[in-house]
Image 1 (cartoon, rainbow, N blue to C red):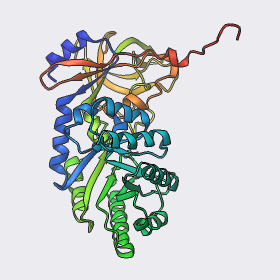
Image 2 (cartoon, protein in one colour):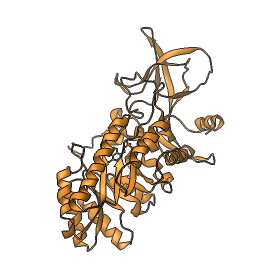
Image 3 (cartoon, rainbow, N blue to C red):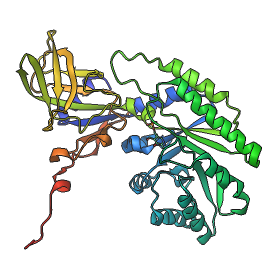
Image 4 (cartoon, rainbow, N blue to C red):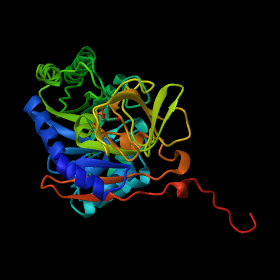
Length: 400
Ligand SMILES: Cc1ncc(COP(=O)(O)O)c(C=O)c1O
């Protein structure tokens, strides 16, 4: 969005707010498509930011959905159920039964269900059996934590698959963590997956149709980060292409898709100098913006200043939020043109996880509005500000 449009946007909307830019999102998807192997398709992990799901509807093949709430959001946005991957370590049995039944009734079944435990496997099998249908599943391979199934359990399930007409085992899902900057680690993971898939073929004659892999691709958030994304993606792509596994490869991505398209705007509401240190207090804070890898506010994210009194005089300032905690520091010693009350700071790369990972109920401050900017220059509110005092307010009935 041009600066002129940005100025008009700032006149229209009070801070704090998030701006999601549809053009940037399209650009990002095109970028990923250009830099990933042709045969790879994209699955968007809704948890990264549910506000861009509708914009992504025609751009990604699948949506990974991890809770009943995320599912309702995707349904209400008209995402076709065949694009849903119902995932997550806690699957609500009533919801699963309802989803399968609705799929049959509307002739629009859910695309995939992941299996994270033998109990989930039984739930899906019993549901399919009771409704006389077959459910397409992905078995989630564990990365030595509470998620997924270990290799032995998957092998057991695969070995008995012929006696299980109710489940169609489409392949393997794997996710082991986010913001992976180490290609060595990704190489180890891809090698492990390839070897495991190969062993399923050799030992059990099972050829997985697909691998849904969440590589946790990293985002460069801070000034001075040494991250050459094009080279990184080229090396990563080579690793994928060199796999012996020749089935469908789906990349389950959140951060890498969503971060770029979001910006967070917050206004300077107070300025002071305490013991020779300059502080700017803003109307937002760490409950609304979080950057993975930020350490004690020492790293400097990409910030743009919309100044009420433009000046060339630079001053290092600690930018602090509105919460009553000394942790509420967004950046320490950020060199910026001298700030004034009313100036607006725009934080870039705020599209992934910022809206949901902050401690949004702390201090009962409002949730900020979310604005969507379309490619034609129009913008509108996707979510009005929400008061959070209602969630923190005890309710006593008379006489209690
Ligand atoms: C199962 C699963 N897939 C994909 C993702 C998305 O990860 P990222 O945002 O690093 O791409 C997550 C994030 O927690 C996840 O749990």
